Length: 279
Image (cartoon, rainbow, N blue to C red; front, side):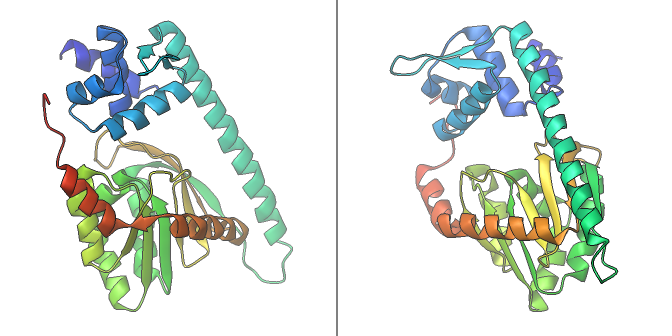
């Protein structure tokens, strides 16, 4: 195991993505940098580096300078990891808040004249997610929509979700996704378009979620995947609460109207070309 691997692997356990961990390690080892040399060293786009740095700043693991161009400096590990722990505590508090909110909504549902009762559960692994999603797609009647991560696009391609989605569309269903389309997922985004999914691009997704037939929701709490394997951990909330579904539907339509066709985004990325190593 290299020095870099030995440092990055534990960092991902603190909730950092692999990109964030690599960026933090580089700044810690080589000192303050501007985004351009970081992009060259990490072999990616400046846009991607900007997003990663912004996330690290939000997590109090990197400090930006007030000068122009902006220099980014890694916070000392002891302070940075303490901040990461506080972030996890905040996420747990948020999960508890959502849990209480949904429990209250579920209790209200029991007083309705119908027998319909809201249910919810926490999804903890990629396998659990797929185990839930596959039957949902098979039983879909009208519509599936969502604001989904680039990782979800990869999962759909690699784990056989797309053929089920294609079959639903051929039955007359409609599928709409808003995705942050980046160069590495161009081919997989085209795969979605080819099977009839309507895809739009936005780099301001906010909460990630999907809604099935306007009533069943899966919303991500932590959907960053370091690897694409069935036992990979993730955290998402599954619920059948219609009130929450309506909130997500309204959020989606706003995002859909503010986003751009995926075909336009792919054209822009192809003009730029892939990130060049060492350039």
